[in-house]
Image (cartoon, rainbow, N blue to C red; front, side):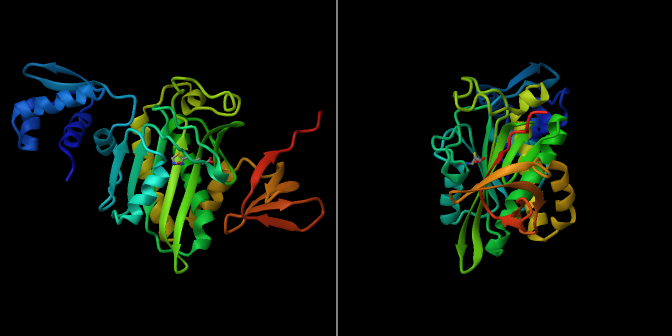
Length: 331
Ligand code: BTN
């Protein structure tokens, strides 16, 4: 059952720019007009603004700039049976929260989003800067029961879906830097962190965490990120509607998950990889377990491993590692 405020917002959004009468809302919800008014007040307190005109009703004139659960639900186009989402004001890490909730038996799939993380995690044990309430910190929990070998492809597939969504959303083409960085040019706009619990050779709990720099952080970037990070707003030249983006992203991840479970991702994976891969043909250094490998990238294999041609040696595959670009020699 959707929450009352989700229903109100759905009605108002369906006629965006138009009016919805308090009487119509009250009838739809089966509550009094006073009760409708009380919900509108709560929505105002959460950052909405409404015009209210006697004999016409209400219409939305402003939406919150930070995540708002009923609005997200109202904007979500994809209907997955039993799917639920939660927006937290603050959490240690949405990935850790999803892991705890999966362990406690919450029915999957579900999503946890937060306005702020106190211990946001990146890949390879790094810290993910999570101080900005106008960025996106989201994790989805699944119980796929597939073999662990498929996890790497899962992350790449989700990264490709994220890139296509962002290309449509911003009108600017992003790229993936293997295995999990979302880039605009040579700056990072986001990343994915997949974690899993494996039982008896099956992935029982799967957590997909997505961090995206959406609008400029109100307090700016920490010095170490200033020259490396970017936001979707910067890439597209426009402020991004965070709730609309988050709803589109959650919907896209749910569809991409179904395709992955049913092995349909194979139909488009190659084309999408060719479109968004930022590494193919470039000379890079891969740091793996303390060793450096320099060579030309030749794409990825079926399991999502990076293919690297080191000089005249054999083509080598790497399942993990950190890629850095070799500086181009002066012309
Ligand atoms: C990376 O690029 O290293 C991956 C970054 C992933 C960050 C997201 S933010 C939401 C989720 N919760 C976390 O603690 N990490 C992921």
